[in-house]
Image (cartoon, rainbow, N blue to C red; front, side, top):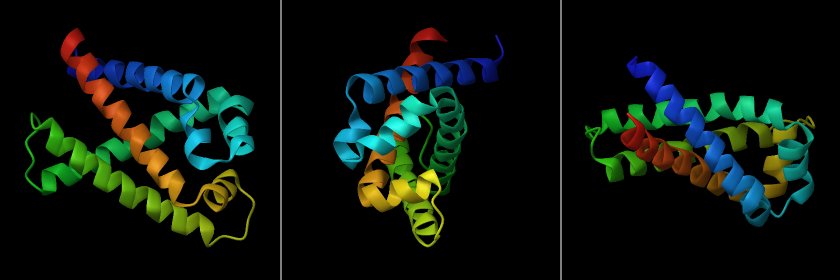
Length: 144
């Protein structure tokens, strides 16, 4: 079987599971952000659009985390090191996005999200991205 198919399958399945559990069952974004209307707008108002956006954003975050791990010479089988690298790069990326959106005067969803949730949105992103990574690695090891 194609290596890339296995990786993308594991990633997509992981993102689906983590989204259902953290967002729709545990309601973690509302718990952390205290912005239920924005969570409802993003996850319930346009769920397919939001999921597709998350597919690309979280893949970007994971890629950045793995590049950071490479930069620090963290081996691919050092999952704790990879996870730490992912948390660090996710925090930096999400903080940069927060600063970018907070400096704008517009009313885009992400501007309103970061204004309402502040740094708690960064914490949520770190938890979401790291959860997707952990589940993805576990699924990939079990399936392939």
